[in-house]
Amino acid sequence: KNEVEQSPQNLTAQEGEFITINCSYSVGISALHWLQQHPGGGIVSLFMLSSGKKKHGRLIATINIQEKHSSLHITASHPRDSAVYICAVRSGGGATNKLIFGTGTLLAVQP
Amino acid sequence: DGGITQSPKYLFRKEGQNVTLSCEQNLNHDAMYWYRQDPGQGLRLIYYSQIVNDFQKGDIAEGYSVSREKKESFPLTVTSAQKNPTAFYLCASRRTSPSGELFFGEGSRLTVL
Image (cartoon, rainbow over all chains, first blue to last red; front, side, top):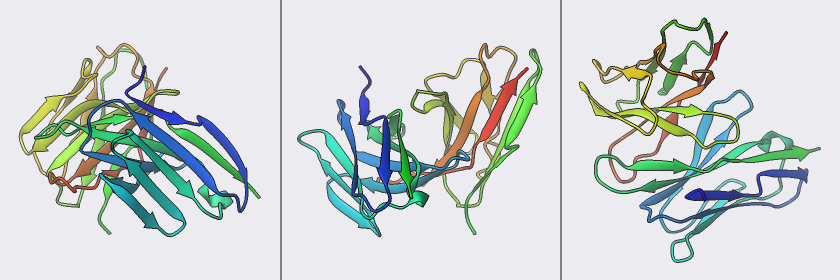
């Protein structure tokens, strides 16, 4: 079993829909990242959080440390949100700060 | 604008040849990383460097080598010893602080013919 599991693996939505992508992990973490990978391959960091909730525009990320679970929400989805969304957890401390990546959720928003 | 530049974006190589992927950052970040991405798998760490002239093996270092002679540069060499080098390679950097956000390059796609 992977240490970081994302669901769903694939998601198709209609423009305007509210979208939720989930991430569960089985290791102790110091932080969790949500990343967006564009069709060309480049990756952008959306959020880094260690507790609670963060919001940026139409994107909201939440984390529940006790339940080892995080969600990424997209409100009023748009075709330009189509991308792969990747959850990654920072495990361990000190110099290594190892990142463990989920396999990603492929989101397609149709007009 | 600050960021990470990877080159080349696409690279074709014959079996038995070494190839070097470039990664340059102007973010003044201490830590730099190389990841490999394969279909259906999460990114896997090849090598990382926390400071100039020092680097450590990641989870899949065999068949790869790196150097860190300058803070801005962290090139990755894919050697002929790497048995399955065809993949997408991503370079990243961050400040070595608890709140250090991760920045990625645009990636390099290597195909071995």
